[in-house]
Image (cartoon, rainbow, N blue to C red):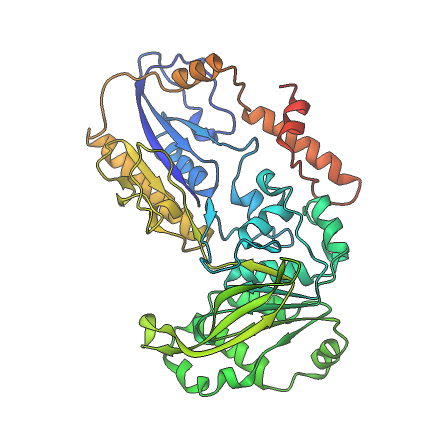
Length: 450
């Protein structure tokens, strides 16, 4: 869902014997005559947005030739690096970067983004040396979305429950030594504005060895307010309300009474500063108490003037994601974190398209990206049919291949990835895991003989 661009390469005529690109769908394997025009399309990024667009293009135009480029030595983007290891079926977030808190103390040791933390336990090469300090008793996550709940769940899940997931060996080792017993998730607004979904909330409520901490005062008057909200929001808020105000059943009460860990939601609090300890590390977070103004989507949090300090030894920011500029030649709105576009068509750059979060901003889940990518692909095909794309022969992949060769760069092919995939699966079999992820790009290249 991150920075994904589609470039129209132009036309070419390939001989019938030219093999399809590795990893392409069966629909690509239609017979082509040597004189038949083949539209060449370049996709930058092999995450869900890239693959869904390629899938749509190949399904709707079987003669198309699609080349997918990826900066990592392995494909699939957030499907590999952005999904909690105990949630292999959930593919819900991505993007190249996180939004900064822009508060004093953000640079202190022990403060990092939830995105980097997720990348660390998922084996993203750039985060493999993160080394989070989990020797503290309390962690604070700034944000109340699904990513925040993912991180809280990983911090509090008994390590033995993660042993048969694809979490990295290094991350599992650190989590085994973790002393974190309490995790607070802090949000500027109230229970009606949380960004997580009911499935993730229910899992947290039922998390083995952990109990929820919710202040009933945060839910006063909420019963009347939820009557008119959409059904998914109503069901989510009702679950929060029951958990906060009703007496648990015997089984749940016994489980919570024996729990050694806890998690809680702190509403109406806005981070102002990460407080340093005498040794220069973090000691807590200073929070401004807020109240709500406005109604509906216009509801915003405003400070009341009161402050409070929340002691902790680990701070993780989960306040949103943003895409990065792709290239100086590609328009980019730094404020919104998107490429200016109309229905996926990049403004003022004929033949260039975008999809995913770089197209619409950091919202939605995997299904949103699928629909969005199909629409972008459809726009490209419409422009192709209408003759609106730049005409004339272009070298396509041959130019990229020559450029890489001149620089002494040997790219990792899809067949190379299949070898790495087999190696990961083989390494995981010994411990009952689906795979043991390779996290060092240099080790990957050595295994491939590069």
